[in-house]
Image 1 (tube, each protein chain N blue to C red):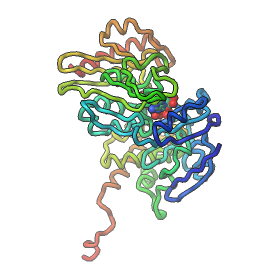
Image 2: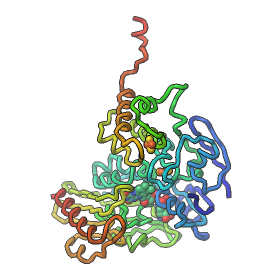
Image 3: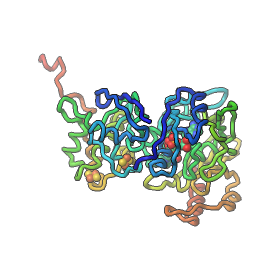
Image 4: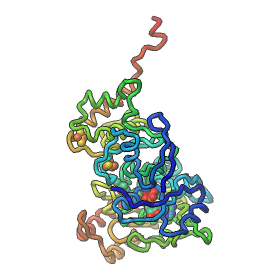
Length: 168
Length: 259
Ligand SMILES: Cc1cc2nc3c(=O)[nH]c(=O)nc-3n(C[C@H](O)[C@H](O)[C@H](O)COP(=O)(O)OP(=O)(O)OC[C@H]3O[C@@H](n4cnc5c(N)ncnc54)[C@H](O)[C@@H]3O)c2cc1C
Ligand code: FES
Ligand code: FES
């Protein structure tokens, strides 16, 4: 049996026929060739495969591609806009939030979902938000700092000049 | 890991889902956060999945005739953040927010958790402690099952073949009721090694329920007698002896929180 699915990934509409047993992460990586989403444990534990499905952080190794029919999906490849890094991407770069980088796409996707719900998080809240994501390198300190950096940057008044300032 | 091949159908109504279940080795798919991991390990090999996650009648939380009614396909995350739950059934918000991690809570559902009846699941203890009823629908119509009669053994429930849980109904506790859920989590998955839910009504009546320590969750209002009759689980996370010790510690914590 194969089933036709239509979904939007990073703003682009895709229609494909897939076997029901195809995992969403394999659809993204093998069919759409979006290999930024990683498979770490393949047992729902590590969060390396985290993406957004209709705005919600989701372990794509624990979802079937057919379940995502009609869904809006964002992967790490969809975070930068017009060649400008997302504040979280910039933060992980600035704060050395990664070593090997394997967990990073999942960390960023989980953090991005979290920061929409909590714009001014404290350290404890950030650590709790990461309960579904494992990193085997950094020891988390710099990951937490990165997320704090991004939260500060995202909630700071925009650096872009307002109309009023521009005319002064 | 890839499951054995199966057919898939997205049901639009409960009747359609019940009809679709009737042929062969079919299974309901809700959030998939217990079923898919088991299928990937090939411990479960259904020939067809009937996806109920798009049935709007199974989602959402409302108040009706003095009860809170939660659709079976409502996610843990939606229950944890719902105002009505926070205001009138806060133990459900407390318990739901302790399940797994944010990604799991975004997809896993209360109905899926109850039907799965994992011995370490949190919802079983929570529904037992609040005197909930589980509403199921099958070929012969709807029926209500008391939570105290629902869990019948390891991964087993009173649901009949092809019956679907449609809602969880909880009598709204009277003002002045105090309730808490205390859990000692397995550090990786956060499943309960011991979970203890306690509800203390204003008249002093106290409901106590445990999960994680034996084949299935159970009510233990007379805790001392109940705990001495339990056959404690023993696995690589905790020995029977350690679980017994933790059960007493977490019971004490829970009782202290409600007096
Ligand atoms: C990493 C991880 C950590 C977890 N941690 C915890 C935890 O700390 N505490 C906890 O309690 N749980 C935990 N879980 C389990 C999680 O809560 C599951 O979501 C839940 O047990 C099953 O709900 P589901 O909607 O995902 O069901 P599914 O996986 O879709 O289904 C589970 C079973 O129930 C049946 N079913 C589903 N819905 C219905 C229905 N309405 N009527 C009849 N049958 C139905 C299915 O056929 C299947 O047999 C964890 C899971 C993962 C992957
Ligand atoms: S690969 Fe999905 S959680 Fe680890
Ligand atoms: S940076 Fe290597 S696993 Fe996190």
